[in-house]
Length: 443
Ligand code: IFM
Image 1: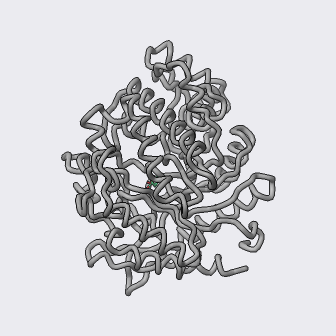
Image 2: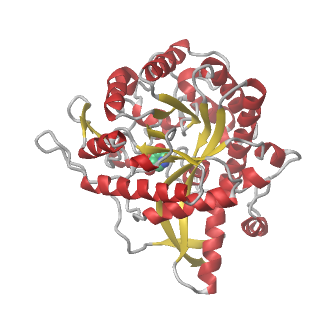
Image 3: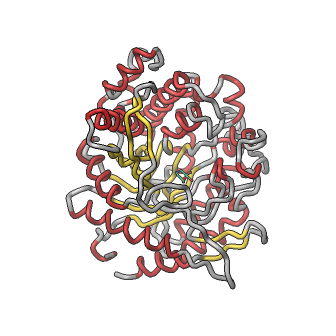
């Protein structure tokens, strides 16, 4: 199968700073909203946090050595904003910059292409304290300045940039469902946060165009392959509204410069729609180069008129991962076609895809058959999309190693490498690591 993918296809693994780095308040790093949130009782399963995580900050060489053994040609990671700007802006933490310099140089030495996400959820706590972080329109200038600095520090070596990871999660999972930092539950605030995130994405792209001579910049969204729970008119409409909420809001708006109209009208009537100022939509729709698609599951949706969203997700009957997410590789293929056709015919990278499974270390081995099966099916779905004409250019498995899975703590393991959190963070490649390695060699 591998040989059927384009020759210059990027095959990689993905991670995020707070989930793996550890060294949380060390070497000049400032706190993020997660440093704080994880210490609030009841927020995280088992009261865990990312203080140490996989200690990648100190063990990055060992981790890159594993990537080399794996045979990937690219690595997607995020920069921790508070590690480089402890206060969000102003005084730079040179020790943090040095860390990313070493990381990038080592990757390039191993012919592994660095793909950098500027924001994967760890907002500097200072900005939260000063003006409520993403709730304020001001944040776009801060994000723009931070992005400009990163372009100038690393742009000579990093050629693929992602402004942010899953703005759906940094808005709704954090401000509507209350599961992620800072853990609020208010749709009006959540929609305004989503607006400020999109503005900030646009600002970063604008800066990139003005300041960087080569390279590409894109936006990574989480995607849901939405299906109606029945053929009833009400459920079909609910599926449409839900698709606008999860997908359209973040995929359509940056292309068209307009929010999906049916859902926007509903929010207007409910008095929760975001305030849009002159030129906002122009900034949001600043042309960018590619889409990052994070795909995990499908969502089955039925009508729920009493909710302002007009829809609710119901349990489907497909086999599920340890996260309780349905396994549906056909959804990846379908979604890639949708993104390509409906949202600007841009190059696409699958920037995350993977599975949490019940992995156990037995006699020094982790036999994670479900992950192998999952990856095989999703690689094949990606190939079908390419054969059907989608401009898919890369695939990043989530994730390199078991790590801090946000509100679920360390209980959910997504890695190709098992991390023994009870035994000095020992790394043990799982059977799926060997599967991916052999797949990559099978030219
Ligand atoms: O771990 C997360 C990641 O940070 C963002 N996308 C989904 C993953 C699995 O939940």
